[in-house]
Image (cartoon, rainbow, N blue to C red):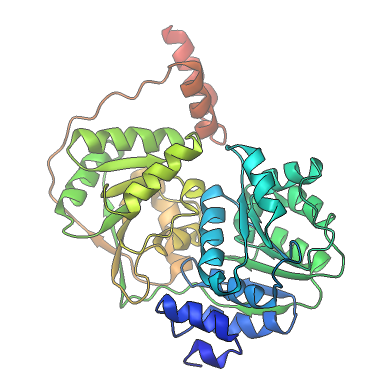
Length: 408
């Protein structure tokens, strides 16, 4: 398969694709679109950045009839991802003049209710969708198509019951599409319970060593921030996405980088929607060079010019690592993935190496140590709450809290 025109897509959609200078489908699009157009339920496992959004958006747009109510529901794990999916629908449905409503928490619900009334496509996060259903503002009883995007992340974030509740408000005879970077037991539970003989498209997460180079630096924990500043100053092009495992750490690293004259900012779950959107926009247009994020906050980040992904903290498994590094080396461009490895992460690195099956080369670098500001353990109630969220899965939190109390 070489062209979208060979996928039985309508002239309107092909025209919109041509307007956006897209002629060739990605592998996941090539495999998925024919099954969706035939009305089959579909389960797709595909890595981040593989083009799966158009894999479900294009055929669903083709099947929708203008002015006949809600005909497609897309469930996404985060506000950022919901907005990006909605933008793709809007971009490729212009010729049909379809309307898309994107719904998520943290903003006024009234405007979203008004948008729903005139839309054929709804894209939203589980909590806000349920809220709208309970208010009788969203009626899905005649919606024939359900798409669950980033299914593994939805399950990881604890949304499985919400998704099932939403499904119970939809017709039993419907077409259901599930897209996931990994297939775990919870994803399989939904597949077995709700999908009807789905076509299964399993594309392995493969790192292409020809375009993505992977390195790690073995560095003491206390020197990681100094090495990070050095590497960012050494970087000659592109944008850097830096992963930290806690919200508190994202804020701290952003301040460290800013004090060292690096254009940096952070994004995490404690920020308001407007603040998150502003930071993401600044990153996408190059107003900041480095963005620090947690995995959950980064789920909706799809910026083409990311040249470096830096793991300041390592994730627990190879799948999450693949999600992270999949945000660079896209569309044939080269990219660099870097791990700042400290003594507590050796076991994690071994597990990642086994899962990735590609060489991660060890490098050494001489760098100047910078002054690191003291990280306060006790602050106002809001800051303490966010730190509690950061440490609640770590056995050391109670100990840290008790130390703080003794100091008072």
